[in-house]
Length: 182
View 1 (cartoon, rainbow, N blue to C red):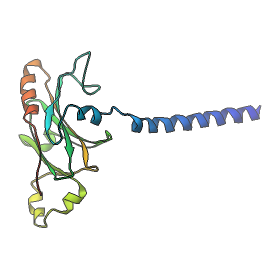
View 2 (spheres, rainbow, N blue to C red; view 1 turned 60 degrees about the vertical axis):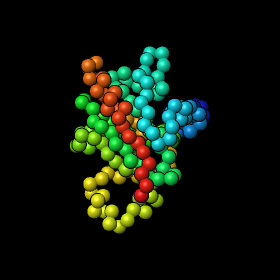
View 3 (spheres, one colour; view 1 turned 180 degrees about the vertical axis):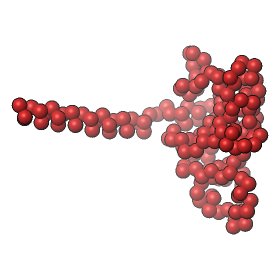
View 4 (cartoon, rainbow, N blue to C red; view 1 turned 120 degrees about the vertical axis):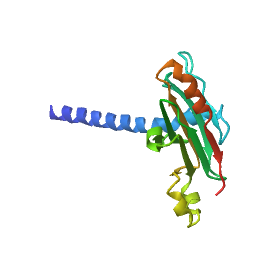
């Protein structure tokens, strides 16, 4: 009897290890991740509004129809990026993802505390190249370090009522995502 319990426990342990390893490995094998889907519709270093999701089709999965969104596919190989997003009437958020769909930074209009969300996106090497006297000016500007040279910036604006949707769409459409020399 003890021998059977040992075999059952060993089988359950081995099954758990295989299950856990599979769950961790599967996302890296996905070929149609968000970065690949956005690459087909968005040029590099430019903010592009996404079409509103419908029941039949949406560019990204699990998009909420109460939000309007824009995406900036960035490449920091040549220069850092300057992002300027006007704040919508209800709520605006900006989320940064690596090209492997890992979120590494997010900010919303309440945290920014201004009429627009402005920040500089750069790699650690680009930030190290900033002049020493830049530290004085750095107190007024938000600098985000990207863990990868390429990735996505997703800009979302909430329209809790249908009448606010045009203002939210206008705020997202006015977002600027442009390279900026050091």
